Length: 263
Image (cartoon, rainbow, N blue to C red):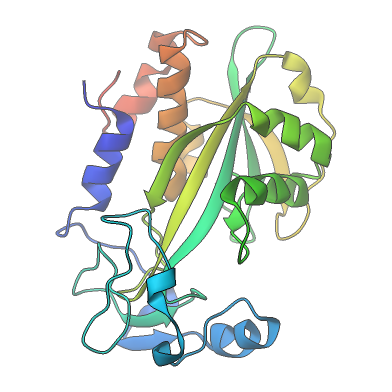
């Protein structure tokens, strides 16, 4: 049986798939947002515009052979680029792979129903906590940091929860900010809390999160969840079903509604 992750990668890697783009990219062919060029340079989280100043032999990717491959102009080449994508960095700070980490936390209540921890983004969309990996930082450390910053969770509690976590996906993600020369690769860490007391953890939205909540997993939830994260929740469901932690048939409609094969 083909896994959710394998199905997800087949979709993302399909060169004929229509890629979504952020609205600022419309009508552009080579574009890097001023926020990246000005604030990114000033605050130190973005690369210089001159790719000649960067040693790409020291940089890696989770995709392909792990190396960053360059085009004739010296710019990194997105391994899943299409001709419809713009050149430049768009909204992304780094040439090449921009690494992120997403902690996906689930728990079951007293009745055995599954819940997932979500934050509300400034756009109004719901998503898992997460963010970009700081230079020299491990993705697992980023996951703890983002979980604390965006949900108000105590650092010790976050560390204890993620210590038993499992990496569901490490690689390319279908980010609408991606370009032919800059793209996002994420590490999704799933941790399941069997204790229903987790639903009573003190949470307080912080950083750029507008709200935080435990949401019951049901087909309707996917309409609220940012679509980039749909497959990751299905990967978590697949793992929990395989481990016998949840009843498979209760979540069959979640897979079928999104066009994924039910495990």
